[in-house]
Amino acid sequence: MSKFTLGFKFDQKQVEKLNKVILQDGFTDRVNEVRKVNLSVVQKPTSSEVLIPFITRGGNLILNLIEEISGYDLNAEKGNSLAKEICFGGYDESKFKFLSLEGEAHVTTHALDYYFDEDNIPICTITFYFYTRSKNIVDKSKYIKLTSDIASESNLDYALDRSYLIKNYTLENSILFIDGPLIGGNITHYTVDLIDELHNNNILPVFIVKNSNSNLIIDNLKNISNEYNSDLHWAYKNLREGQRSNIFRYVDKHNKKFSKIFCYIKPFNYITPQRIEIHPSTYSLYQDFIPDLFDLIYYLLLLHGDKKNPQIRPIAIAERYAREVMKTINIELLMRRSSLTQTMDQSRFSGG
Image (cartoon, rainbow, N blue to C red; front, side):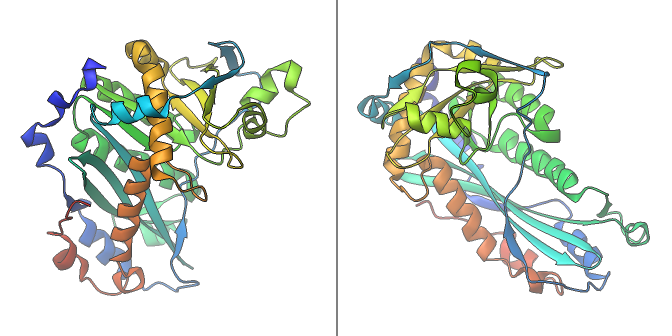
């Protein structure tokens, strides 16, 4: 635990980097170039999730048990004590799509927050991309992206922008909780590279997955393969409130760096469990701390206390900041005239 004590976290130079909203480089130019296309709007901007696919079937994976299959009790009081002694933060994003006949505009706010003396101090970035399958449109601007697969291309941009925020603004000697899976689709190598860089600054990255449709466990443990509909079904039926599952290790046979250590946590009855993921390199570096980490996660789930939308507190706060920043953007107006730079460039948050 000494790696994450309070004494490390009050580096004034690091903290001063927080508490602001940052526009993506060339943001105004990107918007202006798309505006010239004179879009034919087909629907109003809509909220959208970042969807990261994950393959759970086939012969290209290995699933091993690190612990005996069982439920393991968690200690919220211990987690509470830890939360007062260590530095931790959360990451989440909010995304809107603007659909037109000519293509899709994606506006995303990425948010990172840290807890200091009963205040939450965030930092957010705002990004803008336009994707089209029309080469004629792309030829008119270096900022418009040509792609036949908007979902994959936008995921790559998401991964790069997420990495930029986290690499540049995550505080050293801390724990960072990241919303979303560690392994998934075409962004996996970006995530693994990010993890390596975080380790260099003594940052322990933890990935939290809600509402997963994974079948890794039930497809690879023959004795239960016919009993459950999904891994969430298995975890829900086999865990009591306040327990975690045993720890599993997933390995991609073709690229062993694309691996993860994971378990499920059930904070409340009648609520689906959540999957907790860390990279094997993280597990090796911080193995002695992992039991404490699970207690901390359990406490932070209870602290947030929302049974309709169970999340750990730092991710829930990051999500709220991301959504509040998004509310300040009139996306339809943004596509027609530029007023964002003057109003957002110098925006600052008050912690809370």
